[in-house]
Length: 70
Image 1 (spheres, rainbow, N blue to C red):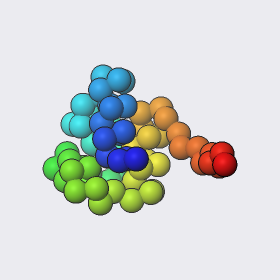
Image 2: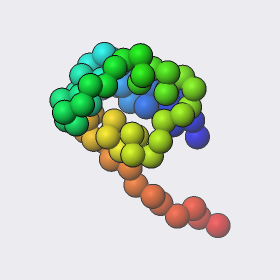
Image 3: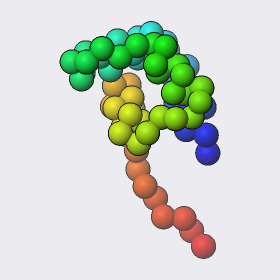
């Protein structure tokens, strides 16, 4: 699974742009978060788990860990 592609799909489905997402992250964390930084992390696949959690929280999603079936 490519998490960057999944996040981009969710953004399209929720009609949220990267600019809007960067603004939401900045507001929720009281820290400047640029669209360039976000875009590069998604493009390069260098986004970490905490950032994924923050992004999903900002757009109303969550992460679940589900065991694989055998």
